[in-house]
Amino acid sequence: NMVLNLITLGIKFILKTYFQKIKILRIKLLTKSKKFRGHIDKLIIEAEDIIYKDFYFKNAIFEGFNLSINFSKNRKIFNLNDFQAQTTLYLTSENIKNIINKNCSDINKEIKEFVVQNLFIRDISFDNQLINFYISNEEENFKFTYELIFENNNLILKKCNSKKYLLIPFDENISFKGLSFNKDYLKLKLKSRVKLETKKF
Image (cartoon, rainbow, N blue to C red; front, top):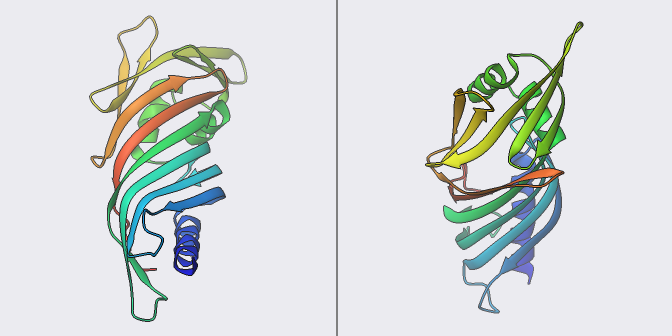
């Protein structure tokens, strides 16, 4: 379908514009009608090696639902309305290390101060629901261990054997749906309403 192919190209352009780096593995558009009538029931995007505003992700699966698309008369521009989406993100220890070491956002500065006292992270490992941070300076090596949980739409970093904790809030348009640990990665599930800053492509 030529129209769906055009939309796919537009989505690829959007992704390349919004992300510092992204390797797109698959884009799939699902519609109930054989003839496109401006409605897409489901959009599936699979990607890897992602960097967005200095946030690093190994893999991501994005599912958008009930998208409404309106073309201009010349069909070279289309408007994409806001829509609901579910995203699954996979973060390796290397991803988390890069985020904390390189990202300069306000919340990340708080995380770096809380977790490693603004020192450089040498390595990270996962141990059940725990994250171990390995730090070294010229004289000593350190290990800091934290529990990562979520509650009331906040991620919470809690220092083991201590009452100290840090709330990591999410954007008001994002609902946190799940968190699970694997030996090699951290898996996050999010639900959100997608509102693009610019809607014309």
